Length: 435
Ligand SMILES: *Cc1c(COP(=O)(O)O)cnc(C)c1O
Image (tube, rainbow, N blue to C red; front, top):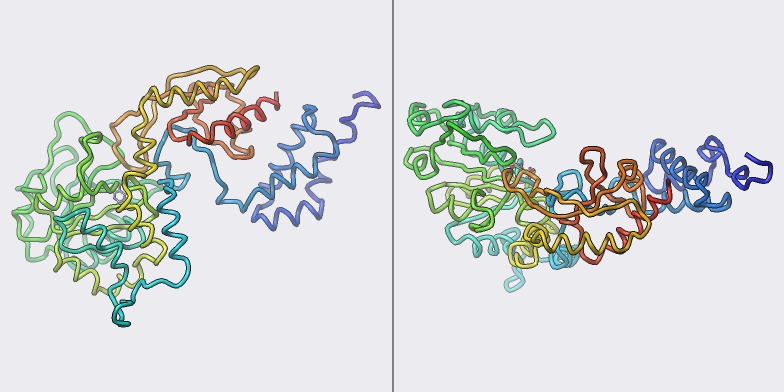
């Protein structure tokens, strides 16, 4: 490095890591040692590349740290996975967000304004669910799908058996296995059938006297093909024990674009006693667990003490109500239904905004994700970039999560908002500057 090289003035890593002002900014942004280190190194890389002057280094680190609290920073989802668990599953539509914001203050969540008397909690959300699923006599909203399952099996089967097929003993992600969750409630799981085939006779062979409920689980994140069969809801409904069906991803009514995905209305009309699902998968609402079905069964759940520990809060109830009423503005449905040509048009717009960048148009294969429609491919288009760009994009502002595909960074445009293409282009150009 020549004596007059401006890069000589660039501060050293250890000096920056010990800088009191930067450390205070990191604390204020809930960033830890590792994140401060990343911000410092990423900024120094840019400075050494001549992208930032020595004077710009500290402001750039402050900007990177000040972008918002760590752990809940906005991310552009360029993975092609619409319901991405690590990115918070369903993105919320404006109408849902507005309803949740409006519920932030005092609201009549348990009050009848007409009489001044106490009223059933979350009536608006429950009425919206019952209007959307007329086959349900009653409904209940809890914190998430797992809570709905725990509440149902505890209230109906604690100290007794929950009968389920060996083909439906699924792990829903991050090591959570449904049968272990059920066993933790004090019910004991009785496994019937085999991995690939379970018949009505397998369930019927268990003495109903000790059975709290039968449980049918939709294998929501994998597909088994070949010599497979399972007892249907209609068959299981002929047995004396209550039938609980975990449909997983939360379609309330059939959707022709997802022919293999179960829905609450159909499951109930086929004889399920209770149906449960998540609110933040295909429904496109906030994290919630929805329970729909027979009034007597829902009543047992609502009266169980555990309900008090699992019930949804007012903001969630407002979000569920809006998501159920405003399905036509669901962002999950919008991204999922984008045609390959629509995604391609977005990819072409992005490419046009990247002159001089080593980028090309590529075919992509997206997914619904989040334990929904596992066998359904979502063909789309994206931009292929050098592999080394992925990390820079992730660490950039805004943060961009891409997919790595065979040594290439791929930006799949399926779940990127149309009005975020310029922002995305800026992020890619910034990443390209690192070369
Ligand atoms: C996602 C899922 C759950 C868990 O729901 P959460 O809302 O994540 O708690 C349970 N069962 C099935 C079949 C699922 O797909």
